[in-house]
Length: 270
Image (cartoon, rainbow, N blue to C red; front, side, top):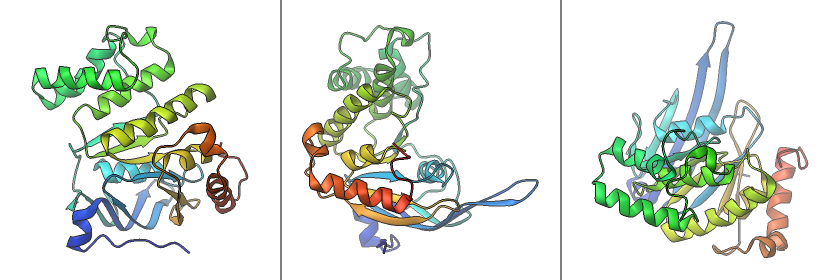
């Protein structure tokens, strides 16, 4: 049975990064009405890492767009740090499956594009860019163009760009899905370290059961369309996680087994 917090109370809002209350999303097409999300409620405390898994088309990405203010719910409310989301938000970072870098700009200048759009002080932006590039292992590649970088390094640039303005909430929509297994594993390790060092609240959409269990404090498992929450699974592992050791833990096996049971798809999402 799923336990879901109700984010309507002021006290809860103050401690919440994201509050989703009885949200539904319906689209109208020429042929029929489609319900993408149905009665979704979730509370995400400040500093938590939440992974969202579910079948393709169940509304995972739609949920992120609601939090970002890129889409309005048909019913229900979405709050970001206690304030109802009514439109696009400046206090989030967003990382997509593709890095979406500008081919004619260097790695550094692709990151600084965020500063230009937000009119950040130039010196502050340059200093923060250098810090992030060092944190993500990009030192030495500041002047490299995107085609000179591997897929994993391009995603590191996209992550730096999303974190440049130090957003309290980071939304990640299958950011490692197009990468090879080894690169994905390396970036999972990096992401755990970055989350611990920055304290940013993270919502990650992923199709990988193992990735969700390795990275998250809690895993939200969604049903097939119309998407709703089947269960929220607590992950009882330390914040700092050695990759190989974590995979061997009984708790990791419990969480991944429970996710697969709820999805009823074996290892199909991996």
